[in-house]
Image 1 (cartoon, rainbow, N blue to C red):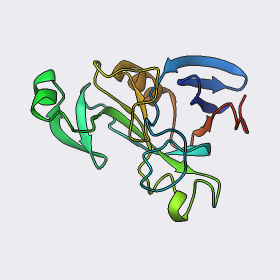
Image 2: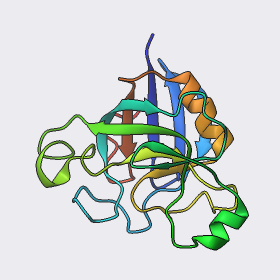
Image 3: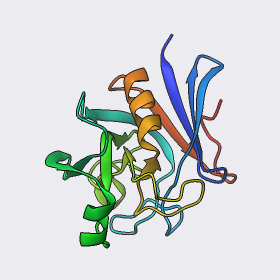
Length: 168
């Protein structure tokens, strides 16, 4: 039986299912600009996606990523103070690809080309309400747990109260 991720942007939760059984539930943070599909919007897209690539296998917790590459840095509060405006992508990255042409795939709404990820964030970052630049932020231990539980190709559905298509 395959696993599926359901992300509820209203509740700011991510649930991992196998069939109808919920295996895990995590708090997340989605885009502070709200929900939307448009390139450059800073919004979190809706709809059916899949894990396109898993990035960061076995790197240390708090490893810093830029453009999906580990920089060799390990996040610390001192690094945060030195670069307070930096968008911290840490520990593991699940790169998403939309599955719905014209909605979240191809053109100006393409989730993969927008570089929408599920990724770790500093422990000091607030979780449970929108605050990212469009990605799904998770606590570092939670993203490690999720990363280890899913494979590339895993279905990921992002929903809100107004759009529950594909939800369990």
